[in-house]
Image (cartoon, rainbow, N blue to C red; front, side):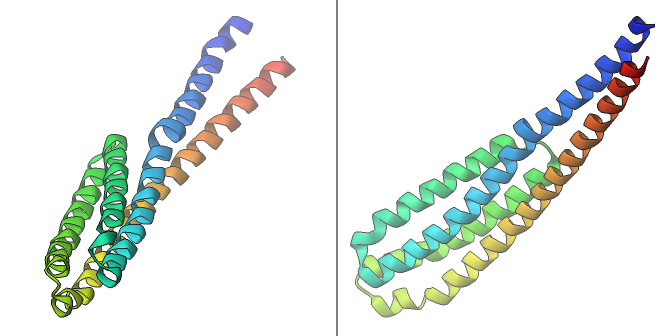
Length: 171
C-alpha cells in the first residue's frame, strides 16, 4: 500500500516544485525588471530636465540613467516567456524611441545654446515620458497578474500535497 501512494506523492511534489520554479525563475524576474524599467524612466526623465536647466555638464547623468533603463529592458527581454510579454515590450520600445527622438531635439538645442528651442521640447518630452510610463505600468500589471496566478497555483499544489501527506499519515 505505501508503494501505491508513492507515485501520487511524487506527482504532487513535482507540481509543487514546478509552481515554485515558475514563481522564482520565471515570474519574479519579469516583475523585478518591469519595476526597474519604471524606476529608471523616472530617473532619466528627471536627469533630462536637470541637463536642460543646469546645462550640458549634466548630460552624463542622463546617459547613465538611460543605460540603467536599457539594462532593465534587457533583463525584461531575457525573462520574456510568452507573446504577450513580447508585444508589451515592443510597445514599450516604441514609446522609448519616441522619448529619445524628443530628447535628441532637446539635446541638440541645449548643446547649441538655444535655450528656447530646448524648452520647446519640454511638453513633448513629458508627453513621451507619460506614454512610456503608461505602457510600462500596463506591463507591470500584466506580470503582476502572472505572479498572482503563479502564487495561487503554488498554494493549491502545496495544499494538495499537505492533504495527501495527511492521508498517508493516517494510513
